[in-house]
Length: 125
Image (cartoon, rainbow, N blue to C red):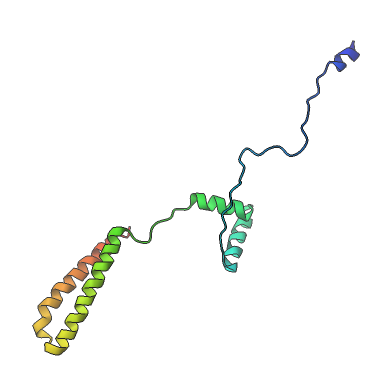
């Protein structure tokens, strides 16, 4: 009776080879690095116990990227450049015509510059 029960056991059929991955990475992204950047990334990956490519993927997923300047801030910089140009012209006129004749105009321009710098510095946060 024991021999018949052993013959009835069904053996599991094993498929040869490596099991299929659930997530297949088929796309490539080429990134150019300086030798220093490569050493830095490889060192950080080694410290984390990861391969550099896996460390890079995780770092890219968690990174927060901020634009350098908003459209509003870019406008403020253009205004500031225009005000600086006007100030240079007034300085030139002050050398030619005399300083006291242009003092009031220079004060109004300086107030505008201070306002723009205040807006820019308070907008950093």
